[in-house]
Amino acid sequence: MNYDVKNLRLADIGKKRIEWAEQFMPVLRIIRERFSKEKPFKGIRISACLHVTTEAANLMRTLKAGGAKVVLVPSNPLSTQDDVAASLVKDFGISVFAKCGENRQSYYKHLNAGLNQKPNITMDDGADLVSLLHSKRKEYVKYIWGSTEETTTGVIRLRSLAKQGLLKFPVIAVNDAKTKHFFDNRYGTGQSTLDGIIRATNVLLAGKNMVIAGYGWCGRGAAMRANGMGAKVIVTEVDETKAIEAAMDGFEVMPMAEAARIGDIFITLTGDINVLRPEHFRKMKDGAIVCNSGHFDVEIDIPGLKKISKSIMPVREFVMQYTLSNGNRINLLAEGRLINLAAAEGHPASVMDMSFANQSLAAEYIVKNRKKLSKQVYPVPEKIDRLIAALKLKSMGITIDRLTPEQKKYLAAWEMGT
Image (cartoon, rainbow, N blue to C red; front, top):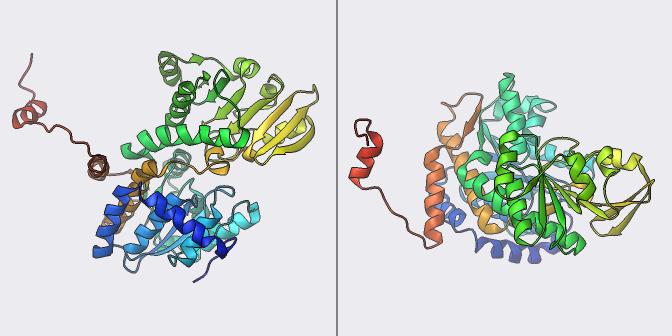
């Protein structure tokens, strides 16, 4: 078995953490039990480009239980949990190519290692594997049956490919499942983003002006949690409808040019480039904290920040302090990478339980329907979405009402009026 991890001696710690996370992933556990019996992936090669966390480890265990030959590579250079990577290799016999803090060259070396096994299915968190398959590794496209995509940013990239007629195989947009983005993006990102900020800085959030750039599901979650911890939330948006929603949710809404003057902590969650730029940095207070919780590290214009700074120095493990020519200090967290994964542990396992249940069942759907699927981006079938929701409710000990025959008939008919 090939692998490249930081230190196999970390495996004992990693195994305990993987098993701890498993306790909070009952839906994935149920799926793994079925996969162990049915072996839907027997003889199938799956390469996954995901954050190497305890939750992803349990997804890899589930795929392997289903008969797959699995390779896991990182979707971010700073999000790998080295003890988890070691345990997957040593305790579970799964090939992992990932090291926390790896440079760009090593990162892409590891991505390519994921493709070297000529996968039939890829799993992405940001579409990096799919991008490589469409650019530098085109010769491996012939082996691909389909792919799944975990995040909003990746789905945007894939839909762009499909729109241009360039997508070379079908993709399931796992991110768009209701049991994914309603919960993972809102509750997972919301809590873990603030967790990352607090771990990196130990700052008190109560009373701070918290600027949330982007009011999608991730932005909603971060705003909700920040508000709950006593922060004064300000939202910046480019979408009129989302701006109205933020205002009606009780938050101040204004352009970033105005928010830059009064914000204490800034979080970007847009999926777009250069949301925070030099014209904003120059207006910020001395000591402003800036971080990103969008997938890629392009939301903050770090090269632009460097150009207007007279000195740069590390002040804490995940904090780089930039001193501008006017003397004001701006504290950039986690190099502009995902703050919740770089400085904390990412989403809680109970949330990722649903996200990775979607990943595993979407992969099974590709296997069963690959001859019917065309080269486009598909939603997760509603049947799968509802099954995951039902399993999650059951694991929580929650029961709900069912429609009576009369109610079903009423909802399906047009004849019955007022």
